[in-house]
Image (cartoon, rainbow, N blue to C red):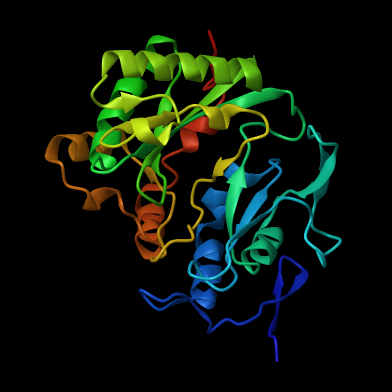
Length: 296
């Protein structure tokens, strides 16, 4: 029998709680739900008002993995949805605004992916993102070197960058921005990626071409496009272990760049819970008044 629980006055049916979703560690669906409930206070601000794309993996990362952008069948009427403009025509998507909606969505077994804009102003970006993706034999160590360069370059334009792990091989940089369309932010991000390649030609590539990427860090600027999404802070990833796309401090990034030791930037659910308990949200500065930088 599927257990029913109540979250903030909403009744939820939570299914298959004993199902192992991460065979490498035995991490179960029940543990996935517990993780999201535990980090909800820091996760929800990063999801709120952003139409979500779900990367679902209901049978674990070794099963079927697929994107779901439209409102799923059977979505409770109390889950907030919104019409979102798309090139192929408007679509209705989910907004996770509260704990009950988060737990309903987590029960689907999904990664959470968000755009760099909020539903109130779909034409204006409020985030800038770089996805740093290493091509073997490059690793997250090289990503950290590139991240430090990009941090300084953004700061020169009055934009403060924050870092998080991708939950996979690489690193993400985030910044709060204002007063610019997604198209303009994308152009700016591409310009900086090109600068990074010119400044570090043996380390960086700004084009997606696979043949150019071995041994280099691909600085993916394209996720700033209005139609694109990026793995949200604190989302679990569909990987062999329950790794999280988790915020990290710049001192940690610098330490990995200097030491060449990878382990410090592989963060699993249990470690993230402890980090949040001790340090709070390392990305909280994204929400501070006056934190957003103007895109040149």
